[in-house]
Length: 285
Image (cartoon, rainbow, N blue to C red; front, side, top):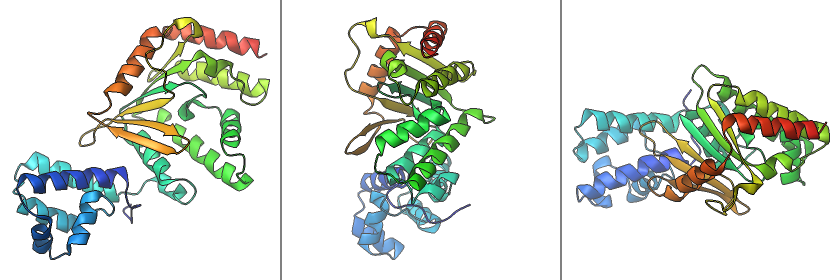
């Protein structure tokens, strides 16, 4: 159902950027476009920066002003506008997590292919329930029990995309250290490793292990994801830092693609990776 979106989402920023590019291409000043809409310049500026998403009547008026007659382009922008305003199940957690994570969950829900490189912990979509709870507590030691429960619930709900009628492809390269770094007890770690083996059997999931003896890596930077999105959205790379999340859009994601492809080229094959994961699980018995 439609509702009031969080300001400044990736969706509204993408739509605003395209509107700004259309206006600039026609040589129309911000003030002139605002007068055409009978809005003030501050309102139109907020539309273009994505701070506040434009509503359909104003969008249609601007498309006419900018001379956008191509049916495919009009439909693309109208669909993007619809997606901006569409609420998803994740919006129920908007008060519990940072806005950047809501964007991340939305990307997961719309992506056709997710490529993930993990250097410290198992990626969220591949975590077992007990491992996920331990990882959340380690990352947020000051959190209340209620907060941990909400974050854990969100993470478990996110994983349901792997079991839908049209799941995304998930390709994960896990550094061997991720498998050997014990998060929680031996039982928790063994359960997590067995969970990876089960997930690797899914037709849409590929798990590869980058062994410690692989040699020089393609990149010394840490974990990241690359989301391949359907039209009209660009491909997006995501990485997390202690200062917050960073999103990078195509075409400026070549370093992420290079790093992922390089790590994958050095990793074990799918069958060999499952064998290693199973062997490490046996060591935790």
